Structure formats: structure tokens, C-alpha cells
Length: 506
Image (cartoon, rainbow, N blue to C red; front, side):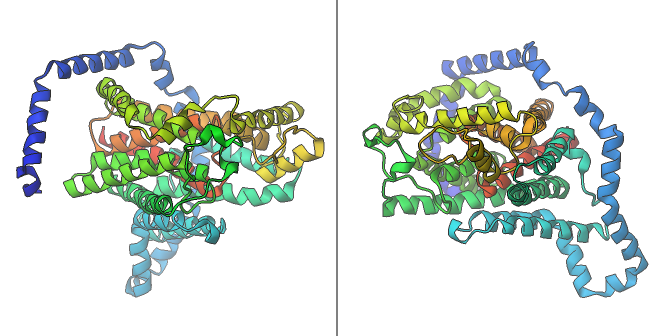
């Protein structure tokens, strides 16, 4: 590192920084950024959006929260009683001490499991792996709770709206028109709920959250490297992944999908995790760790471009804007300038793909309208209960009532919000929107009232990733693959954990 700082390139970089600090351009950007910050603080629109609602404020002290916390803590209470009863036996047992030690490091174990789960090739993937992994982490957590009184499942941090959402998922199975089909999808949502519960409970300090994000960065690294290998090996252009009229995408090569079954799925994984990787680069203390994380971010961004997934591109752009907005609003003018300067350097195939966004002549775009119409017909026919949990139940419902008029098969609504509504009903879509808005609002409020710290940076990134996913969801359904659903809820839990840590450091 000393050699790098003393090199000609290092000296030139320091000279440029010094010149920029004293330049008119820097003063202009600082003034513009200060104006942006004042608008945020004084805005009559943003202040109500960032204010915590009455229901959210009442939740921690509510009877329901205390009851659920008591019920969730019962297994740990029993285990602690059993430990005190046979304390000498447990303390003399090598395996008991090993279990206690592993239980204390549940977050570290989760970071390795995250990496292992998310780089398994699609051909060898089984959705039961997620349930088994988070079930094991829950047992590991209780092993730690057996000899420690500060290990408790943190129901309070989950919030009211996510609990209502998970409750609506169970109701969607009960009122499903195809209960047997919906039950299979219930298992995927239970895995996601365990992911949120274990993550929020296991993260006790900043290093825990950093370990989890490092595991996610490992997933980005491995999957992106394989995506680059696919690009160099060459991928045959699949007409089903682009417009049927290949003339609209004549410069576009085959779309990389890495370990996943679909390039859009790979793009959604990168959309959710890349902001966290960037935050890890920004908050790393050592220069090698910072450069490594930055390298993973650049590699992942390149892989995201190679997926040619337009919805994820737009979502990622929004995520980056939100992250800068939350992290350092004064950098927004410089960020937009750099974005404009980067446009001429985009590959021709990427630029042509961007130009097809919203083009009615693009069959991929046009094919979505029959899907939206079918989803709206389901809502009109069953607005309260929906068709039942899971894409299979929705497909069967639409087929039985002849609600789809398109040519290609109906897989899902290609819209996050419509699909949640037709699966989980009115309560499901309302609680889903409330959960996302509540979490993003809490994150925005926490970072505005927290000093510069790693917790603040990672919270900004998690909230930004959720915002990007919500925008991407306008044109795609991110929960179509259960593995992406798990990653989505992991990012949701990372935001909750970041808010909790911000509250402890502020």
C-alpha cells in the first residue's frame, strides 16, 4: 500500500484531489448539494413520508407484540431452564460447549450458508435447501440462547406490517381455489419468514451485519465470474428472451444467466445485492478490503449489463440514485454528471436494448399487456381473497375461468403488485405495500438522524436495493423463483438490522 501511495499514479491522484478541492467546480457542487440537503430537511412532502406512522409507533408497546414476543421466547426459556438444571453436565461436555460456541456465532454461520445456498447451480437446486438451512440456523440460534439470556428472537424489530403480510399468506392458502398447489408455495414463504426472523435476531453488532453482507458479496463474485465465463465462451441467442423480431435486438448477444435458470432472475439477484456490495466497499476500514469489495461491485455491474434485463437496469439505476440521496445528498449533482459522461461509453448492444424500453413494437413489451389484463380480470372476479397462493394456483384459476387472451402461456403477471394481489388478496397487497413503505421510511429516518458509520451506509444500501426492486417489480415478478424471494427478504432483514444498529449508535 505504501508503494501504491508513493507511485507516480498515486501522486498524480493526490494532486488531482487537491486541485479539485480548491476548484470552482467543487464549490458549485458543494453549494448544489447543500441546497439539496436543505430541500430534504424543509420539504413539506418528504417530512410526512419520513415520519413514522401511528400504527408503527404503537407496535413495540402493544399487547400483540408482547404476546408474540412471549410465545417466541418460550423455547429459549425452556432451554435455559434445562441448562440451569444440568449446568455442570453441559459445561463438562465437549459437544455442548461446541454447540454453544457455534450458537454464539449464528450470524457468521449464516454468512457462509448464504454463500453456499446462492451459488448452487439451478440444475442442482432444490427449494427445500432454503427451509433446511434457515431451520438449522434457528436451532443454532437457540443453542446460543440456551446459555445466554441476551439471545432472544426479536419479534419487536420485525414490525407490525410484515407480520400481517405473513399472516395474509396463510389466509391465501386457506381460501385458495387450489389448496394443494398453494401449500407447496407456503413452504417457500415460511423459509423467507425464517430468514427475516433469524437475520434480525442474530445481528447484534456491526460485525455481524458486515459478515452477512460479505456472504452476499461472495455470491455476487462467484456468480458474476461465471457469467463473464459464459460471455467469453459464447451464448446462443434465445429468441424467447428477446423480441421475436430479432431485428430490434440485432446487436445483442446471448444473455448471461450464470447459475440461474433465466437471465432476468440473475439480474434480479444482482439488483438486490450490488448496493450492499458497494456499501461494503464504502465502509470497509482497510484499503485491501475496500478495493476487493469495489472490484466485486464493478464485476457484478458488468455482469448485470450482460444480462440485458431492462427492468433490472432501470431498478438498479433507481437504487443507485436512492443510495446517493440517502448516503450523501450533496453528491447528487456529481453523480448525475458522471452518469451523463458514462452514456457515450455504453456498448452499442446495451444502448440499443435501452432504446427498446417502452417500444410498442417490441413483442416482449407487447406480450405483457394480455398478462396484465388477465390479472385485472382475476382481481375483478375475486378482489378480496385472490386466486390462491402461488403461481400454479393462479395459472389454474385463470385457465378454469378462461381469463387469459394471450398467445404465449401465462406464467405470472409480470408485475410484482398485480401478482401479489391475485395470490394473497386485498389484505396481502395492502400489507405488502405497507411493509415496504414502512421499512424504507424507517431506514430513511434512521440514516438522517445517525452519524457517519458502517451501520448507516449499509442501511442506505439495503433501503436503496428495496426501492430498486419495487421499480423493477413494475415490469417483472421477483418472487417467481423462491431463491430470489429469499434474497429479497434477506435484504429486507438487512435494512431492519441496519435500522436497529443505527438506533444503538445514534
